[in-house]
Length: 228
Image 1 (tube, rainbow, N blue to C red):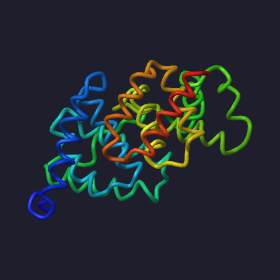
Image 2 (cartoon, rainbow, N blue to C red; image 1 turned 90 degrees about the vertical axis):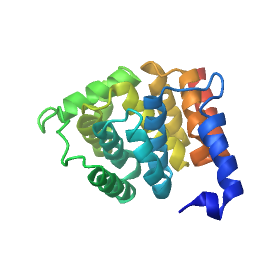
Image 3 (cartoon, helix red, strand yellow; image 1 turned 180 degrees about the horizontal axis):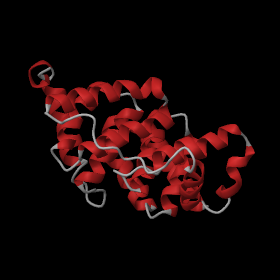
């Protein structure tokens, strides 16, 4: 759709805001890799399929590798579920094929069925603290969280731990209604070096794609996490 023809006034002020004012706001800037990583995760989180189709090619042209893009999509399974992730996997594959990117990509897994729980607990502990060493024992959902979410996904290469915790923050922020988890993951981000100022910059760069209410909720969660 050529919005400059169908909606010229709207596209002018949206693009001026999203691609100029927000990107260049003093004190709120991010490098291209971080900004596009956050935006892709945010678009998945808010189910912005059409916007994702527009942004993914730009991301690939601005230092986001195919592996990074795929890892963002894969990890969304944990925080949105297969039902909401699948459309984005299909879009990503279609765009990769259009661009001549050979599939499948190289594997990124570092765990086995025998050590996925152990490695997942290690990742949880690094992010959230020593109390996570025993948390998996408190029920099967917590065991799955350790072995599947953290053991299967967080341990993969392609994104580092800080990047993975950031995209989790973006998934939760963008879908809304997950404020307790968003606060916990804001704190987890801070624990591994993604500090308060950084997270506010992430929210700022993603605001055009999720609007003001969810962005302001995310800022409130960041502030709450910073108090603890």
